[in-house]
Amino acid sequence: KNQVEQSPQSLIILEGKNCTLQCNYTVSPFSNLRWYKQDTGRGPVSLTIMTFSENTKSNGRYTATLDADTKQSSLHITASQLSDSASYICVARGGFQKLVFGTGTRLLVSP
Amino acid sequence: NAGVTQTPKFQVLKTGQSMTLQCAQDMNHNSMYWYRQDPGMGLRLIYYSASEGTTDKGEVPNGYNVSRLNKREFSLRLESAAPSQTSVYFCASSGDRGLSPITGELFFGEGSRLTVL
Image (cartoon, rainbow over all chains, first blue to last red; front, side):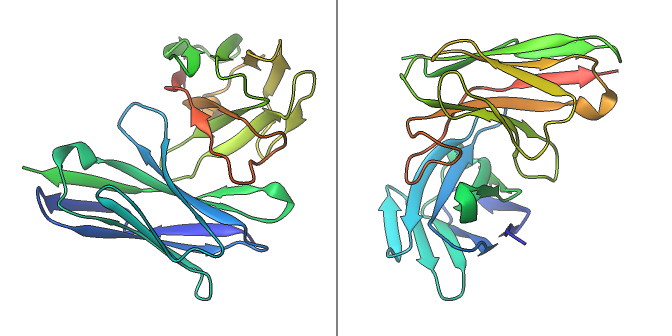
């Protein structure tokens, strides 16, 4: 069964600290994985995409990794800011062009 | 640049009432989608339109109908609303043709929060 699991469900960190969000996927065949950021009351916005051949990709203070062997991806946020408070959704593209969404990690950055 | 625009943003219905959610995109995208988002669940695809003139069911189509009015507009209709349809609905578009963009991204609207009493 195609599935994407994210952990933790929620996380509270102090402003300026780093954090890592996890995404495990069981999607076959696997094509790519995308991380979205969803601010409260808004639609998701893409942060980055990881394809099969990529291990690490950075977008400012966000760094995504992908391990295709263990079927895991992570999103690392460096020097967190209050504006990083949001839900982060992992989406894997599987067989028959199907997108599989995770339930998201809710991050709260506290001053 | 407006992107994807949804109306209304909020709506309260009584069981059995009908309504239509409107969506328009100004990015000249081929594909458009309707998702619902419920607490503790990932976004679930209701219907999609790979191109103007075509529509197909997603994973949770029961109780909904859609119309791809033209390339820009894709509406979602609830004919007889039920409390189980209380949710946040998102319209999205993609530049790629087909159910799932190969490497392209989904562009989402701001969402429409629907409550059915």
